[in-house]
Image (cartoon, rainbow, N blue to C red):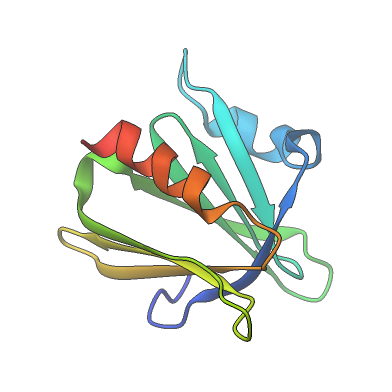
Length: 123
């Protein structure tokens, strides 16, 4: 499992086609991908039911850990937009039973849209 005490850093938007092949076997019938964001090797996929955080492990990257974070367990979430000098934005979620989960996005990411996605599935 990803160590959520440290944020998954500098995620940037990527096309769904780059991750759908690895994540699609985990999706339940009717679940759809609404966005995908990638760091160096790790990535995060937002669906209409949950967040799937993928931790790529090992030298070859063949081993992967898929952590499912259902929206139904989110108690509180926070969106921090980027500024003039701090170009990164953040999404912080507090899950019952897990605690704080923090994702950091590059300045080019639409954090408001991400916040709307989270709100539409949690509220």
